[in-house]
Length: 95
Image (cartoon, rainbow, N blue to C red; front, side, top):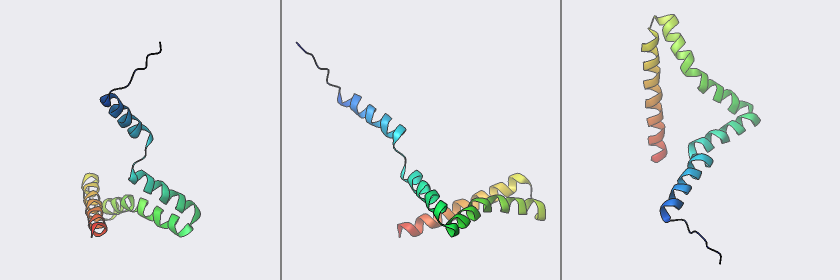
């Protein structure tokens, strides 16, 4: 006689959560991958992406070197600007 063990609902739920967490990228990761792929094919997108990526570092450097800000102050200020920009963008997308 052949016996089959049927997994419980809890075991199935845990298995789903583990596989989803390990294998499935988030929507944010998918958008980032899509942008990276587009940047490989489109020079203008690649340049804009690089500009956005480098801008925070450039601003921190500018604040420190030309305006005498301490590193932690410059980093905090730039981080706050980034958070505000993200909130503005999120608000516009929701509207």
